[in-house]
Length: 359
Image (tube, rainbow, N blue to C red; front, top):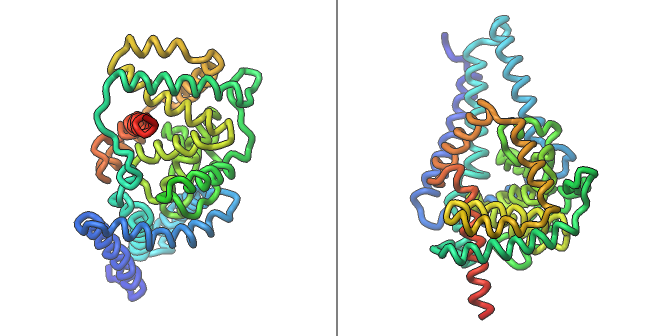
């Protein structure tokens, strides 16, 4: 079966996209400072053009494009079976599509994994700390959670309920944070909920950054206290900070410094959970002493969260976690999915540094 001239052109273009992607990743891996320069000077322009364009749409373009891709693939297979499309043309088209996606991933995400970390640029580097220091931070976070838990709206089941504008407010919160942290300056589009959040829930995923459209997508089906924090987490990826523990820490900072009580509660509770999980592994007795201090008003949120994710336990969630774990490890996060919990190390470092500066 011979390649037509058009097939050769498609494959040549595909090879070009793939070659550029490989070169970019090689430069990011082996040339010190390239990834940082790229993120600041080239990726930032992509956010201001491509990200701004898709940000104008009231829906998640990445979700709609996913549906379109599935339909297109089905139509393509049907056309090949009916012999209305040659196998070579179909193969060339799929290879071109794959190479284009690889290029978009590399240019809007892959290179950024090698940039200067937020911890380095901000001077909040996670280091060793004692169980006593961790326990002190957990106590402070418990107080913050208890204070903010009384400020949020709750439904008849006493579970936090936020209004629908949280997605727009997340962008405002991130812009406000950037006034104190120059590394975070730049354009922030609206974080977007999916038309069908089940797609993320079945993977036990709270949100996702789409490098193909430069969008921050949030699972709006989950318990409400997660949503403000998650929106800020995904928006932090738009600033090129891809490490999950750093995105979590940035989201915690954004929520902590926000005027909006929904965000402050969301951030303090997510930070509390992360730090308390670490304390549990280190000293269960100290954990128990602090755990009983949590306000009863918070318990319905925690119970609702457990019940929600329990519905999606299963093989698909396990496969999704394995894929995500391998993806993170392939991008230099040796802890894999465990890196999400490393936010606690940065939070403790932040409080220790803040105390030292105060003293």
